Length: 279
Image 1: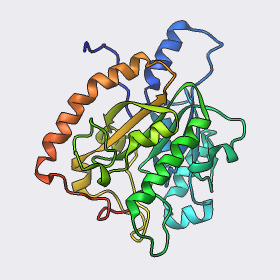
Image 2 (image 1 turned 45 degrees about the vertical axis):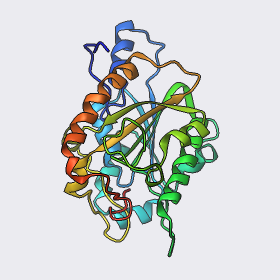
Image 3 (image 1 turned 60 degrees about the horizontal axis):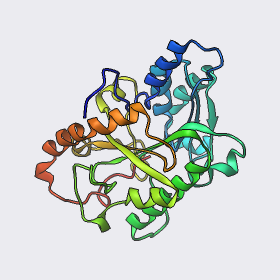
Image 4 (image 1 turned 90 degrees about the vertical axis):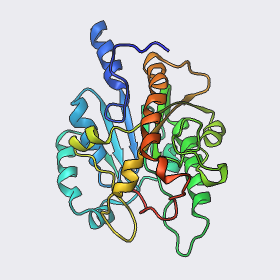
């Protein structure tokens, strides 16, 4: 397909750079800032990176599964980030379960609902972890759909190989994936793009995907970063695909080829059980 000249959407701007530029061209005072809901943001470094990139052009609500005391015990360095976010008038939410968003936000809706590297809450002696992660993904997508604005988008980032879509550069057997497409269909959503997360640009903005679990503050291994992270963009089935998403869909084949080339030697090895639990 023909590639447009505007910047392709990515996790650093959620495709809002294009939307904001279009609004500025219209120069209408009635255009409200896009609203973004971040779920399970762990140490809140992604919220800080997004706001630093888009400045005050968006309204961000950043949430974490832990309450604030537990979060700071797990990520003590996050205190400085929270201070900066509060200074920027960012709405913060603690103890928010992304599987039940409407319970915490009875009337709110968002143009973007984002969850990076979701992981099911830990359970003592729990087995069949991949099934628990699938259930989390299914429940989150249904929850996200309930708070999505008209023509809104859900952005979910997973490790390469986990999603199980045909556009994933690391192809696994269906039973060894999180099965994004069936989970999306259950929520009335459609996967319209799969994008390689721009880790270098995100890192420069201050976002380093971290871990939850025994090794607190652990980072994604160099091996996993080399294989890549993939962002899945979903919309309601009834909503038309807009121009930025069309561009993303055109670009994802090239992005996937680049990841696949780097991960040829890894074959179809499963890493859900060996990877550090992600926040």
